[in-house]
Image (tube, rainbow, N blue to C red; front, side, top):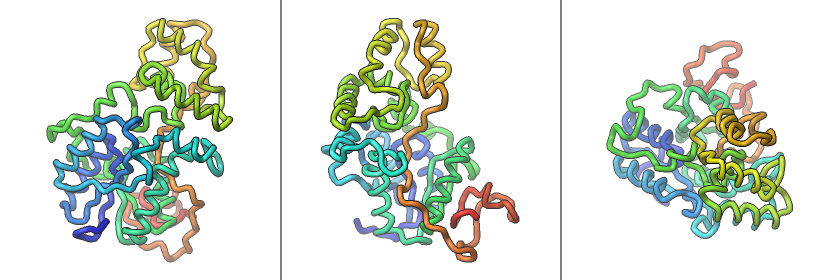
Length: 314
């Protein structure tokens, strides 16, 4: 893809509400010139049509096109097809293969082609409650020479909801916590209970993937083993939703059904799907990072709280 202007501000435009707010904040601060709304198009079988509608509405409001960095077969394959083709759910040190193939690899290739290190700032929709994700992403991208910024965490806010500009958020948020793939291979059992109740086609495809690959999506058992439990929960009226925190959701399920097993996600929260670089970050020599532009105080220990690292923290 060729651009009428050199990319300077790359918004990771996922289709979620937070990334839309970031896009609006960036355009309000810098104008449209140089802004890229970078999206990974996902198969419509697992990315809801209303998410795609939302992306178009926000882009139209901003007067910008959506730039796609997508898997070559995104319109044919969903995440289950990707992992079955590869014969694995995970790669390397337990990292999700689908995330790398569908998002990370296309993102890396786009950056290599259009955004040399030091030429752009990359904007993410993490907020002030996600400092660990901010530090991790800043460090990983900084190791490759890219600056990152986090308007929802670091900037004075000018907008809290797209409804303020007449754009309804995706209907997905009435049930699902994130505008991620349905049947997310990183999600916990609460998400998969929603899949069992609301998307039985994806539940069956998940079971097929487990059978073909020979491994399970979850560390504590295959999907098929949860079917009697989930059917009993559904019969007892347990609402399929991710809008309730995990602890409260399972407490409600236990009030409806006694003797539910303790699940892994009740011991630790399941992480949301995210794009991460798979390659091990290269260390950057001291003295070559460039000046830091974040708001953390300077001096010893700065890198531990830096939100916009230009190199690997020492």
